[in-house]
Length: 405
Image (tube, rainbow, N blue to C red):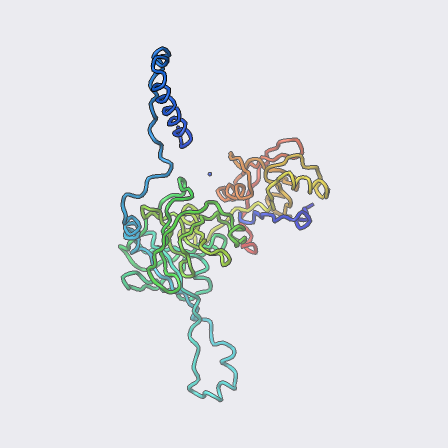
């Protein structure tokens, strides 16, 4: 039996696809030193009798990280990868003639000189070359529905691109051009990334090619729901580096010019905020696309919410679950879909997930991340608390159903 989510006023996350001595001490030591010096001036004999050691002021501790010593580090970072950033023009040349242009009235009025519409322009976006043999990645929404893709380099050369595969779930697309000895980017890592570090975006926003913007990483691990695209399955990097339409698919760099993300989303109501897919995510997806042409996402089939004391009290008051909830934290399963691995494995509404695999989980995003890293068809241990009893249930994830992608 599932839980009526609207009755508890919460949004459930559906697993469908699946971070010395400081200023005060310094002031204390200064105060102690000043007090000792004053004491020595007024009563030197007493100080000698006490034989107090001289107070030594500790070295100052830096409160902020050192600034970049290279004033041109942004330009240097861009120069390292700029040639590998491309513009992607996608259009649907097979869209046919719009119905209005088939109207006899237009035929009679214009005759043989009737103007024909231009091919439907899907849009312009950005991308970047990841290998010297012309492998390119961008956002899936940049090339969605396109029958022709043109890739333009910063030196003016153009190539016809072939869409090898797209993954709507993570918004990643793989494109191949017939070329060799191409410039390519260098991948970095988000493992040691933290808010406040530099972020550099390159792309073609609003038709303005080769635009560079810079800012900082403003947050990490933003869920798809927080970003406003709940149908995706990504934990995004948030940045205040300006990202505008046309930046989609371009790289987000660190201060060394390494790619740490793919720019993908902006929020209309949030000025100055943009989001990027982490390098580990898009690299994993792109590898599968280039090798297999498609991506299969592990899927359990549960809906989850973060358990709090307030949520627990509401649920127990409503009495819609088969058991009382005693915990006040964790990841609570509120629904198990029929004919899914979760149902087959024995998970139930009311179970509180403690671990997935060997990892402790605290949020639905944590659970989803662990499922993403699992293998389809292979047992995945899920430790749950059911009532007051801990259980470990082995679930075999299945591929995400097509209708949910």
